[in-house]
Image (cartoon, rainbow, N blue to C red; front, side, top):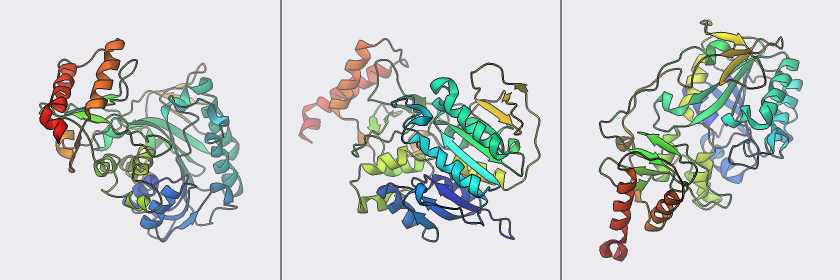
Length: 386
């Protein structure tokens, strides 16, 4: 830490810099970045020119001695509920072991991890058990909590697992205090976000927000959410608004087009950490807060709760808090969007409606009728001519 209280950050599996931008907004500086994706490195190099950029975390022998915080949104493909479910031993998600290798060489005061909530369920929580066992052996206290991006002023319903650990400080004040009810839609007639690629057994759905932005395919085919607007238009957002929905500035990922097709920008944004969530965490890490008591109990059984902590003695405490530590005001989704949206295509709309007829999902009153009207408009002669 510098004399002015500025923390120095190392970002592992840095992606497009969500962790690092969040810490920068809280007044801290990134010194080291690692990511093996050319798209990510193009973005990181453009926005963090002062930081050392490494191609692969496995190439790092030792962390710089000045590092105060290690951030790692380690690969989630093997842990995701929609992935191959190989678990923590999967080829990608097992790279979390590189984080612990570096910490064994050079312990730093703070560690921040992020991943999908399914990490608590896969293999009956085996991945999470491995992580907390490693932290205990390293002498770190830790706290984790599932947080929803909606709580931090961004209209995206995105729940992610965050863990904060420290070998010098109590991490509980960073994550655990605060538990508020979700705010009401910020518009009398809200927009509805949904995933048009679903519709049979599951439906990514959000009121006055979009569901979690997805990365799309591995070959750069975008998979943006759809939005039923208050005027009954059905659209998909521009990539620049997708960046903003994750807390980045518009065109943050534009440098990616120097090394890959434009569709890979969606993948990069969908895989990113929400910046505003990290900025909130970073401010609390730098503030040395006192712990406010929460309703805790010793963990019983194998099921992991949505929030928990341990002081490193091996005992794990369950914490009865939800995903909203605060509720920051924001504009309605319909006015949050700044860039021209595209109408959902007739093909995509028809495919979604066909799947809904095969399934047994229930929808918001008037939703299917709005989609059918949108399809009729898309199939009108003037629309087809355009």
